[in-house]
Amino acid sequence: MKYRTYLLLGAPGSGKGTQGKILGTIPRLFHLSMGDVFRALDTRTPIGKKFIEFSSRGQLVPDEVTMELLRAHIGHLVGIHSFKPDIDALVLDGVPRNLPQAKIMKDMIDVRKVFHLSVSDQEQLVTRIRKRALKENRFDDANEETIRLRLVTYENESKPLLDFYGPKKVLTIDALQPPVNVVRDIVTAIVEG
Image (cartoon, rainbow, N blue to C red; front, side, top):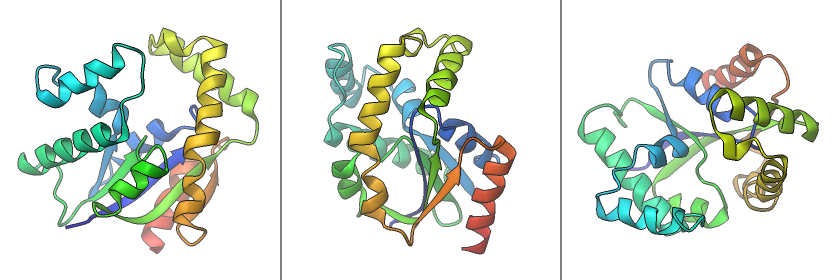
């Protein structure tokens, strides 16, 4: 069974997490953040040990391990009846992160729409990420060099997903407008199908 899915795609600081949390409060939409999946990981499990092996060296977790973790997490959510795939749609944030992940996920998700949260001013993103880092005690994200590196990584690895999913599935939304307007645009597109 493929999960009916909506993707939130955008540079760091574009509001994917904020929008995902809001959308997750709407009945029949189930928000899943890959960052939250990583943070909730039981490091005593075999997949948890694989995660620690890479993250402790400061390396990105390989795509295959990330997808294995995602499948296991979704399976757990289905098993405890938290996510009901027959009536709920997934709202994914932070995954797929790149083309290899999107290709691995093709047999798992039925992407209905990709919401590209676009920010035309990169300096606004830097400011947003720095504020978020201080507010949420994510001090590794407060360093401007780290922020700019993450933005380059997004441009090189994640932004090509827009072409992968194509213009019929991608809706670009101005992420600099008030968050309530962003969620309105997303919900309108979901309702209109």
